[in-house]
Length: 114
Image (cartoon, rainbow, N blue to C red; front, side, top):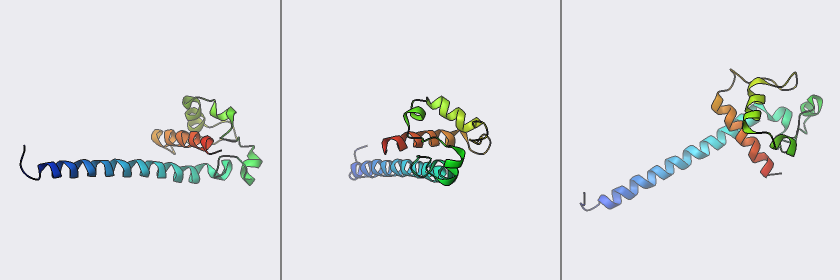
């Protein structure tokens, strides 16, 4: 097709696709932030340090620490899914697998901000 305006139409469609992809990415990042604040921050702190009243009581680890960050995603997913003793609740059935993966990615980002 090579009618007048087709090129403009293609550019518009491409622009819309990029806009929607960017919005979806921002929404996913926002979802991870909201999810972390709702489920994790009370113990681990907004920055992941564990420096909260509850975090100190529960001896929550600093999620930014080398000890936590050297764990594989599979290990962090397992800990979040199944919990860790009495200190870390299990989120299996409370969060979807995708939400847990988003939290693990968010934890990785916290270490970069340290």
